[in-house]
Length: 561
Image (cartoon, rainbow, N blue to C red; front, side, top):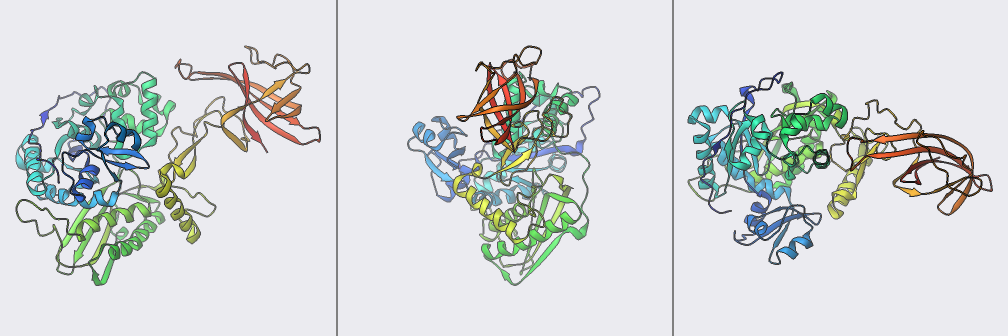
């Protein structure tokens, strides 16, 4: 599928002492990660039998999401538009993004790793994580375990892999990117000199993390160590919950809290097939019903699944098992997708094509007659996607399901940004208090809306809010501009307001209120004043405006109904 595997032994990273007051890192968090670079390109090239020397890239929504090393050498980068990438490399071969293809092609790699290190978790196609204690204890050292894993994956599947060791999944993933071994307790020191851009891993597609990285850079926090040095209380008060999770990662701690509930046995769902199924489409159709049943059981208990175990038993008595680790709570569609991807990998016979004979579970010899879904790790379900329409959500019924399918279909045609969901967030102005996220993404606010936010615009909020404030003229009785003094007072009483070519007589006003935000950052600091104005046309039609004055000009932020 790819070139020969790298046989470079991981380097040993530094050992760091704990900071005063920082919780001790437990050995149980010591993690081994197996990483296959540029996996979407590797999978697509293998399916198309594309030679390794031909530059290739995978695109989604007209944007490059992964590219081969050959393509990078010619100037192709992740995030480029398709046309720009082709301009840099005219011979570039483009593939459409396909999660099912990536998962199907990755199954032989997962099987090869599991032969040497049982208990693996597929984080995503191209990335496997597991507890490092077993392989290290059995093989004697992390370096020896890593060397054996790299060689075994190369011999069995012909895929290049890199291995990393560190405390927690985030640090271990970055260690795998560099092929190093970070001793237990050394994650914080290993992470400290790395750039904050490492928090935004492209394969995770986290828009909120990209925004946080951009903000940290503008604040001068350019390394993970600089970000980790900021007190957690200050991070929580200024940036919100998602930044706190990223801050934990920068400090070498787990993103998820340690307190995890072990799900009870009755949460698992099982389905039997008579006759046994040996086609992916038939198995995936049955799996969708099991996914919905599992999700309903979790919702009844206020839970959501973050680690999903999939167990299939064939008519010949073979047992196939895989665990998928998920960064966010799984929706019914997310559960169904992972089951479909896994069944696709099993039933299409995605077994190693080189090396010794595959293990008995590499490719089933009979149809699947039993399928079991185990929620191996659960969390509180409050972070799940709320309904977009009245009555939608867990009890939305058929109409909500049809609307959701239509939204996903539109995203498939036009890209993820074509269908957006509003999410309330913290802020003072009307534009700041709402964020649009792609349909299906976790609706987590970037700033906590429940914080005090002194100076926030009082209720009620404008019914119409402009993404970009529209110019407006606020005039006094002689036609001159109404200004605001340094003491937040109007220079003269307003008489008329002119907006969108219509002039209205000012009946009343409230304010102005000073706005002094982000004063610590000279590039994004805002110094302005807000004013509420009630105007009426010559025929008596009244309309209330929310105005803001900045840079010596008035603009309309919103209109009240």
